[in-house]
Image 1 (cartoon, rainbow, N blue to C red):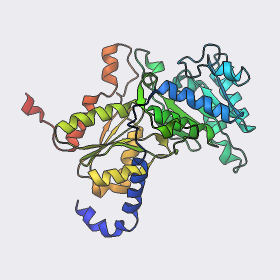
Image 2 (image 1 turned 60 degrees about the vertical axis):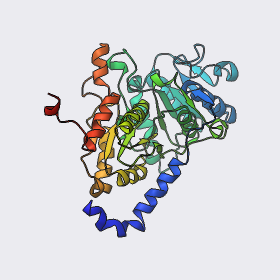
Image 3 (image 1 turned 45 degrees about the vertical axis):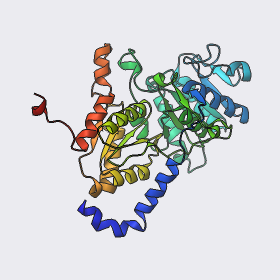
Image 4 (image 1 turned 180 degrees about the vertical axis):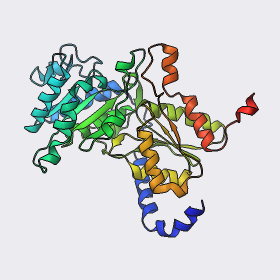
Length: 371
């Protein structure tokens, strides 16, 4: 904290005030208290419907998106409404339909490519990275690639290692891509609309286990013009003792952990990242400068993960504000086990977040005391 005192005068005029403004902007958008609720599935479906209605250049392509109405029913009703020219069922060939989508985007259309799981996007990785992400730069800005790659990402339940990996860090490391990971229905609706309207390729990471969950939505979010800014996090819960960053399903776990911590007198601030690339570093650093402690939470592998990037950002910009070492909570450094008991051990749990936050606040119980 001595470093903070030394720099206070210098920071007051620029960094801290700017970061503080960032927090106020993000915190201003909160869930409605009106009681209106919507599932994440309904939010995604309505966003697709409204964007297809507003722009004839928007179309959907993927396996089972049409006749079957989507493997997870995200595209339900869209084939009947917009016809087979704009809701295209494809063979099981991710490399093929991803490449067709990128080509269509080159010519000014706005494809939404659905992967049944982002694990299958590995079949299309050349088109996503080399054809979509790099074309704008390599053409000196002459070629825009307004395409969205969307589908469930990360662990579901009992689907094995080839269907359970989180690709947030993979795609988040690639220049030219924007990477979004919604948590709530308001996130899903506002961010998908933003992704479809964006001139650049967007990787949109959903979560299968969240599709059926209901969240309150504001009247503003139900408006057809609603859109959330890409690159802005949201403070889901304000606090003063420790900052917890999370995205996708882990936001819910972080909020549950914050409730438990509150009973022990620890006030946790929970940040829903929403955007993995670009990352809202200003909101994260502003929060850490207030709480002086940080816990990062993600489902993905620990090495080279999203939490590691957040940790680096805080150490570079706010090191002297830290009163404790940064705690990283991530999935186990193994391929996802199939057995249910091992699967639970491989994915972060609420109690893991609680323990990490207590360690950061020097409130953990020494092992010797529990023996």
